[in-house]
Length: 455
Image (cartoon, one colour):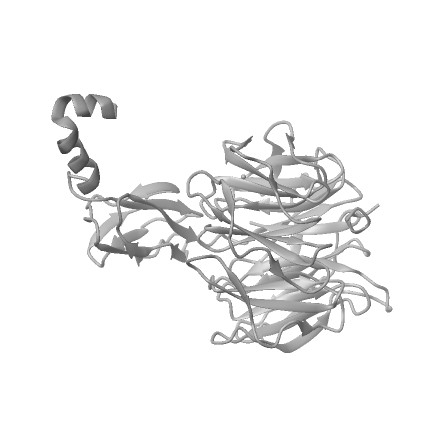
């Protein structure tokens, strides 16, 4: 049965004894010793020569992924603005800063995220009925070539979702019928997978997985439990954080996060709602937003946040429509956009954005089996249908395109066709988002492919 049927020094006392209460208070409030420090995390870096700068002056050369901190401090009330001074080369990459500017209060800043684009060289397809992962090298023309050793066992039953962490080190797979997440180490040279250990227990019916942009936490939507589990991740392990699992709406079906990793959004399929949470930086702990949940149309099955971070869209499978929202980057609140819900004439499910947030691809399941490209208005968030292609059906047979993913460079898109046991590959026109089939598409995979992850 497919997933459709089953529908994370010295103590203060010592200081007081030496300097007295008044002096200690001044020490804490003014942060004597050079001001407050600005720092954060770099992910996805493979090239060399990355240089960051703060306030167009304080430069910092970055040699690898992980934490960073500028040496110069800023006093309370001062401002900071982190930017990329020099992009990495060998290989060439584009790194983008999130949470990079603000005003200093009474604390150091540690949540700046610098995300560097990944190579887009390997695609992983999870096959629900065959309990396997088909792995493919993405060739320069978009053709998929099997990775040696593929397919790989998921070490669980009914895998339905997968995600690669921002550093491209691990693949996480949700096993719906086993109530587990399997963790695999990715061979950086070949794309081959090896188990990182025993699968991790989740809630009942895990259906969606997500890793935060700083590569610190794993989030799992448990559809049967109506919860989200949160785990601290590292070195191939996953440990539940305090308070996990967290209650959400009925039948959580998808997860999304803003580019800065500040807010988490969860669709509730049977209720027609989006739950929303703020995320405690460095802890992964969830706190419900005051204005949530937010309404959708019937059957919200997937939510996506545009790369620009100020727009969100929901595919409503039961009402054959898309919902659109403006996203407040300060509060995380969603506000309905004018002109939505937008009819799609066929049941939409998977969606994927180009890296620049100029258009979104939507997989229409059931009757039409199409992939639709919508341009996004940067000023209003309005969607305009610009082109449509068949997802790979032959002789009129349904293929049920359930998931779609775009490579980090935005040049290719891949669609998991659940009913035909294939993946369709498309070249993506840079200016319009129009799709054209790559040579040899569609490609055979395992039984009932349900999700794709790209590294």
